[in-house]
Length: 295
Image 1 (cartoon, rainbow, N blue to C red):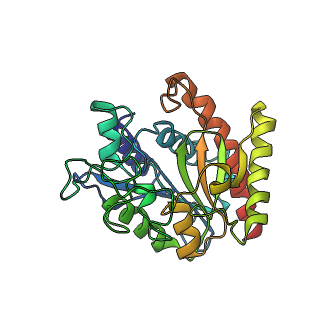
Image 2: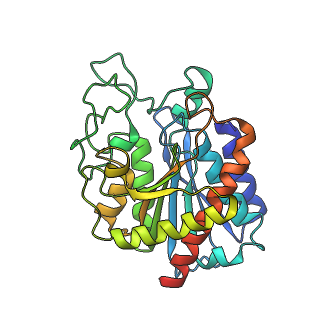
Image 3: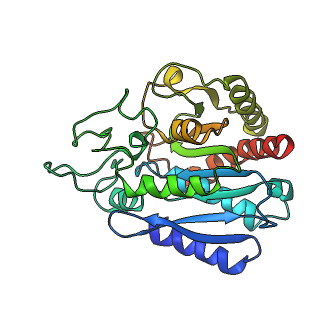
């Protein structure tokens, strides 16, 4: 789906399910597109633990918004079948970087960054997942505005990052699970990303991640690998999972690397959207049940 279709779908859900869905604008992109946040709550009384998620800070990772929308669809349209998942509240931003997402459809399929202008450079955009202020600039970044991993002129320079961080801050005292949707690689990875230092809560992070991965394995024989992001992949500072854990002390903070496909890994065939998204949903359901049971 394109940006307009995603936003229309969210507005339709809010209109059709007013007792369950609250849609609010978390911010505005560099080019002026609203960044929408959807809250899904069966009670709206502010007492339940919150699962917070954002998707598509990296524009080319097209499976990320679709997997997030599949989750939303299951929670809202199929809420009767998933009533236990509403023992928590959900706050989700399916399209954190709408400018880059559109550009990846119209101009450059492999576009990753935001579309902000960099003063003194002809190169456009910042890597939103190197722009968060926790350990900003420590590792796995570039100071060259032409790089795909350009960290930006300052932490939180990007309005898209500000939108996510402001929305997360709003619910931070209740957020017990943070999720950032990315692709690709079949991973649940966790802090710290700037260095190969496991988060002090790494045992619980492993336990909850493996519980989700086990459920996914029983579903279709494919599991996600769980572990520290710097050890499993590569060190990278300024990512959102480190921000959630470091600034807001959310002990269960994960980056999801969804299943890849196509020539580059990012161009998963449309026929794979449902299998990949439904597979992840099994895992996220287990995580949500853990939160409901323990908080």
